[in-house]
Image (cartoon, rainbow, N blue to C red; front, top):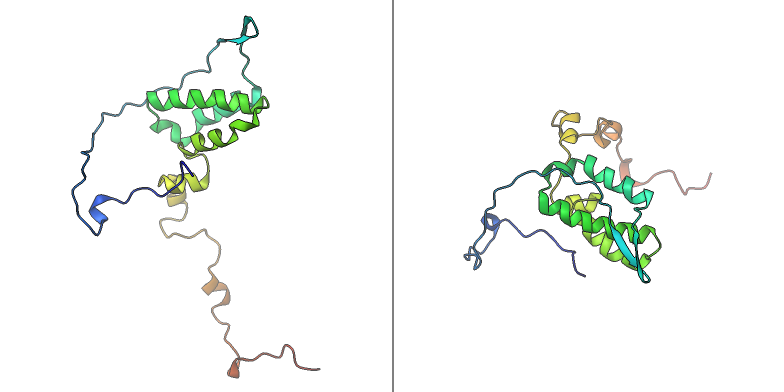
Length: 162
């Protein structure tokens, strides 16, 4: 299935050290401001009519502008997401055949936990919440059940006649 798969392994961690046949291009990165959803016209029959963004798409667009990922979006990212907004609008207007394309496109931006994991995205606050201990704050299984021991012979009283 297109759009699914693991992130390529870091070349320094590969078992085989064959030189990449395609050289890497390093780009200068510049953060871009999010554009507003544009006003435009679409053909409807023989005439041009004003396109109306569904309220759900306007909410979706605002969510992306306010997302933690947005601070890493360049101008081409916003343009791609703007095209995706049109797909989102058509999906919410009843064109359900666009669901697969919409899913693939939003995955490229880390819309779901699995997409963020594939893109190796983590939330910085999660690291600080546990003071770097890798714990949620709830008692560990060892703390809760550490004193439990199996009975000699490995059997319990369950199943025996009373």
